[in-house]
Image (cartoon, rainbow, N blue to C red):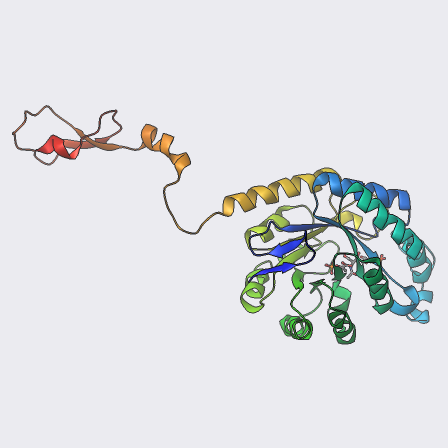
Length: 325
Ligand SMILES: CC(=O)N[C@H](C=O)[C@@H](O)[C@H](O)[C@H](O)COP(=O)(O)O
Ligand SMILES: C=C(OP(=O)(O)O)C(=O)O
């Protein structure tokens, strides 16, 4: 599987380092200043990109759905519509955040939650558009997105393998500038449901870079995903896990995000080659610790050597071939 060129600067897959997305999602609480702090935190943590979620509420939801009560501790309003209206930034605010990210020096994008938002993001000229798991079975939307010929990163939560094959076929019929992310959509995902080995199956099945979007607690699973070959990694970022909102609990703080990225880079450096060989850094230990053949007793030149005369020990002056002549 080769690399996908997202922009001149961003390449994913092949030998490129794992592309790490700091998913702000709606962890900004509907507050643009918190959003900016999260953009800055993503940059300081070393993320490859910061991501939001763009929704046109009338396009994504029916009126009836928007009017239904949303009564829980993570709700920002009496109805689901009130809740989502509180969290949704306007197009002008998106432009402001895009510009802010440019100033900070981190690529900015969002998932398009509907076709109207998709067009908005195309016009905003984000480097790629994310399609979240909520649309992994939305064939009409996937066809639309694929027809626009912009790079895509597509998550595959809430569907089975046959649906993922359909996504692959739809998009690759148009172009190959896309990546597929294994994902389980639960907040948080129980570890035993992560099914990370799916990544190996994705790698064997699809001729595009594959990655992992993780909603489980902590960083261990995400690190394992990189060891299993994830070329894209997405995790939620938050300023405070105890804030109100569905996703904070399964998010990483800026300090945790920074550590995750450091650890990913260590894993990448350590994966190396599958060819078992002696490496240069082992030479001091070979000299210091590896045993060799030594004489176990005194013998004069020409005397016969018997089994047991020669031992295997750590020795400064091991026997050389010539010593037996
Ligand atoms: C599948 C999907 O879209 N998931 C997103 C990305 O992970 C989430 O951020 C949801 O938008 C969020 O959990 C919704 O929460 P509420 O319904 O409380 O606003
Ligand atoms: C829902 C999203 O992502 P995922 O399915 O990867 O959690 C998203 O990016 O908006």
